[in-house]
Length: 352
Image (cartoon, rainbow, N blue to C red; front, side, top):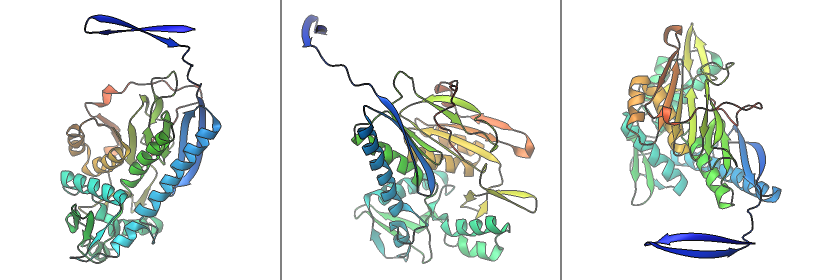
């Protein structure tokens, strides 16, 4: 069979003949799961056959494993921890491309938020992890000692050498508010290098979306609710975007009748007490992840200002001051179409 295509150039109609161009192969849906970076990871993708799907997914999981060896604050042998061991003014350490990119992005957001987002918060986070286990407040003395090691200005970046200098011994960087977002970006990029574009990567609620499923305007994504046992507050069609949620829905501690989030305000050293869920949509995972954390710390008023001043991003905030539920949206949130979930539910929901 011959097919004729016409192309108009400068007012002249040019006809070209294509001889029996083959139809593209039908795409099948494949789903893979595992645990990487200490969180459950799910990859959903569409490929022409099982071998391509398995090879692409395996490479994506491997890439996330590689990044954990660079960015983990738990692994004593990670590049991040080795960098912290060099902490002393005047000693700068050259770092990998991956760690440089994450720290550069983090420092930029720290500047924009006046330290509401700050990866040097590690010493304080460690105290609050212990506080949640013991259900006891960190002592004021320990908090004060830890706070002396916190402050994004204690990190100096040397672009000409791609080197990082930490100014005080004992500093501990914590990339928990940005690393997973970067990892899902890299995982999707790996899938694309293996010829798979229609894909979704979900790492514990940080979700990166490629092209939509066949014959669909996008992936159906549920927006996390404020309470753990509640269904998503709404569903959206999303593609070629990232979405991340930050909040205290799952991780918090009650001490003397007061609820403290696992999220810590680097400026005060205290766990957040605002019961909230912040969902951010952005062009990539590293931006969505970091902004969700930053908006949670800044609070709704300053947080929404940050979103409005960041191109191509949108935020949805649910909080319960005094027990009364309050919903706030940034101006660009309404640009994303609302979806109705299918009978078997949405593809994914971000998890605070």
